[in-house]
View 1 (cartoon, rainbow, N blue to C red):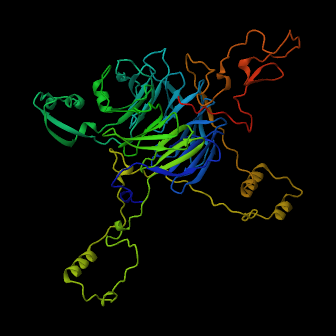
View 2: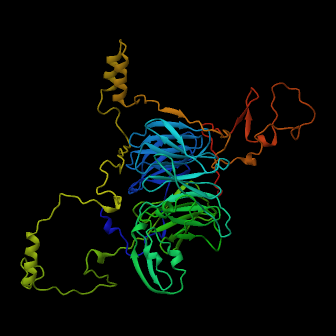
View 3: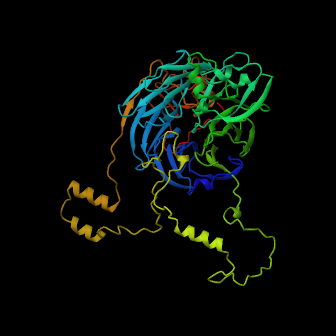
Length: 585
């Protein structure tokens, strides 16, 4: 597909709804692969549904977990998929075969998992109320990242665009930049409000592209020190000068690094430049490039992301199914996409290449895209759209083999085109699919999944022996184990036994194992984790029945077996539904 034909000369963001994807079960989270050809959706019943996004059909269903899937991430080449569920399990999957390669059991719920952008052997995990953990898959080990304050463990983390650094943020607004290889502290700063009060960090998201920003370079009467500086210029201070007499637009090379946004609890989205953060060093005071917010409704944000070309920022409201789109360079709000009234948003993902957004609400994946208008003049410049029929006068030599009216220069030009050799064998790499430090595309990237055709009335064993012949061979003699396996595999009735994946227990210090994932909502707010004291309501007198457990107000969602021990109803029985908390975090 030629991406140059997909480029729009106007806005490059979605404008309207373009249908939905029904995953049969309730969808909770979604993630595109690097090319945007496949969309992985994590569901409430623990399955991962992989969609072929070009055909809008289901390419594969992986029975991944028993509990709901809360986070997903693709590897760089698309062959691997890492998932986390509400039962504190992190699993590594082979997308082609659907087999689980490794499992990691954590003592606390998992909020987010992320593959290293360049190294498939590293996965970043954000446990709840614990320090972030870097999993080393090949070695089967884990490394806990250092934190700023041991008492504040509400930490979010993310890799930068190339995985060289890990950015972490806590509830006190402190951002730490750690080197991925050594976990050394490189830079740090604190996000503050206008009154120097700190605000909690909710999420950190990086842009896929590191394009140079177009900024205004100014020359002023007051100060010429900016031109002599070797470090990045703080243009916000230059613009505050009143004696400006020259403006010109230029592409500044030091902005060609990763750009990232921080979603904070004060309902403001701050956009920073990665190189400026590293230049400021420890305890720096960098200024955000943009501050984005809803000044009218003071909307809190559930999920934020960049567009594929990093020119736009999308934020999903935590109150309703509404998507706000800003232009990053200017900071103006360009579009608000409103979904079904009364629904709450769960997740948002922007397509890596095209102006398409996938959002999840009420268990359904909604697709937002541009309104495609047919423009035939792009293919035939002489094409004119007519409102009514027009009589056409045919020229005398129009359908002749040799056009007598054709001029000599045109014949010369046609001969020149015929003599020119056209290269139809070599394929030029598409720059959209290549990073700035790469010249070629990844030849091993998994773009599509093979789909077996569905046969309405399949024949019984079309290529194997007939059932009568099979009975004759097995009459009066016992088959060996290898022959039985061979026949079962040829019949297709039973697949060979899969190897059980290795499960690694991750031990974290100073964590409470009784934490509940935010997706799971318990009635009564789960106030009583401790033993009930006093007599339950509605009980008169003392009950001397042995081994009879008393139910208190806080035990509404607990059932008791014959041994008198309480069992949580959060462990779902087969066919039981799990209640999902869609409230804004």
